[in-house]
Length: 93
Image (cartoon, rainbow, N blue to C red):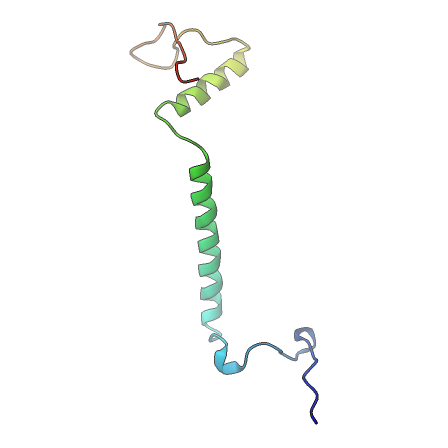
């Protein structure tokens, strides 16, 4: 009666797949790169979809930063070229 191999990877005995089922040594870094690349793409795609962008989202961000920097509520348009100095009313809030 034989006993099963109870060694571990740390002491040099591999309990993993038989050699014919393991990927070739040159393929292992490529598989690791593909898995990492896929994970990064998934994270980037999720972060792009989690922030709603409308036509004026970045304008509102800039206006909010200006208000925080100056400690005032913006009541006139200071960012656009054609409507500079005109009253600003936020209709989408």
